[in-house]
Amino acid sequence: MASYNSNLPNVHVSWLDINYTAGLIRAATFGRGIWESELYTLVNVKENELNNSLSIFPNPAKDFLTLKVENPDNENLFYQLYDNSGKLLATKKLRGNEIRIDMSSLIPATYFLKVKDNNKDVKTFKIVKN
Image (tube, rainbow, N blue to C red; front, side, top):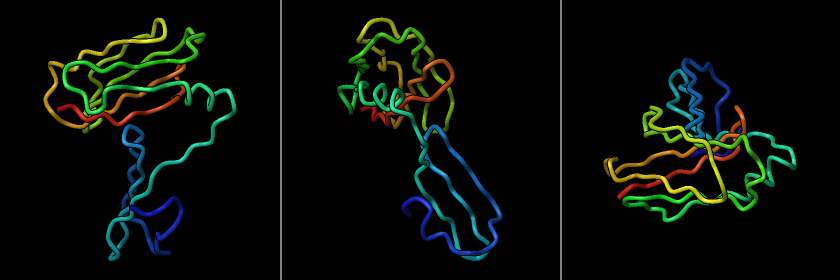
């Protein structure tokens, strides 16, 4: 994977894909293959503090996953669980400082847990389900 804003040749881009769930941007170049990079976003200090106060465990998960919020003062937090194709599987409001997420009915695969504050993305976790 290329680092952000590097290694993309100065050529015509014939296709561009921004996958917010996976946190990737991909560009298909004409005759030069596919370029891929992580998405980077700017966050203010409050968002960064909230981002750093979130954790998940265990990862890899089997039947249950725990999302922990160190500073649960924010009443507008919720999570969204996506599969690897970007399909939304679950949405739930966060209450308290820990929430247990049932993964038992999901097949072993990679999933993405996106935590949001109102409609702003705070943090996205990549989860492996065994």
